[in-house]
Image (cartoon, rainbow, N blue to C red; front, top):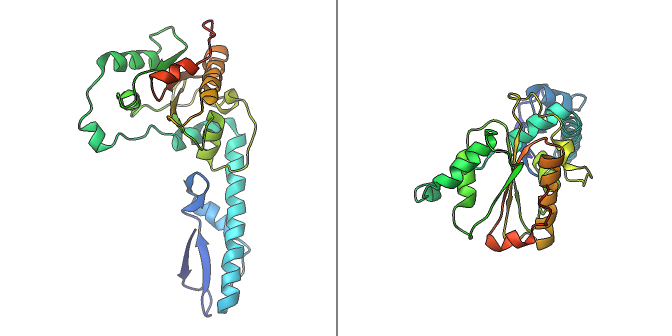
Length: 249
């Protein structure tokens, strides 16, 4: 957290408090409102003296951390808040300028992705396949940039399944078991009636077993429960051989 010395409310040697505006938890910065900051610090005492001040700041930090964790749990357990927060934390990544400057447009791919998210295609989900460095993820980001209902997650050697990626975006460090459709139950009616789009980009370090498992998760969400549109971006052409064969889904 960001610790600073502030002006004391009463004449004393000063006290220290931990700012909650940028409270760092697993998964990045989680902003808290001014009212939440007041709630998290209410009841804390002002201590005087070097050693005691240090203990007081640590105690205050723990109180604020607990308050932030409770707020995160509240958002996760509420379907509407969960949907809103996923949209806020899993935005489409920006295309770096050095990539954007040399990008060659793939009109066929871009048009198909655009038609899919506009519900002009009957397919339940898309798998983007091609050689590494061919511009697959850049094309997807280009088409989806600026759209409101897009949840974009990236899987790598550390985060190898969609559920963990969503928990990581929330800042939830403790493992929680849940089925993927649970995370998308609150999207109906949010920013219009159209379905949200879940993009899952796989890094080359994702294990072969995880590739097949994540494709099955996407099929459950998009084909079986019809809660979202799904786009699976594979790391390279060889990853396509790891997909499970169930053409009916």
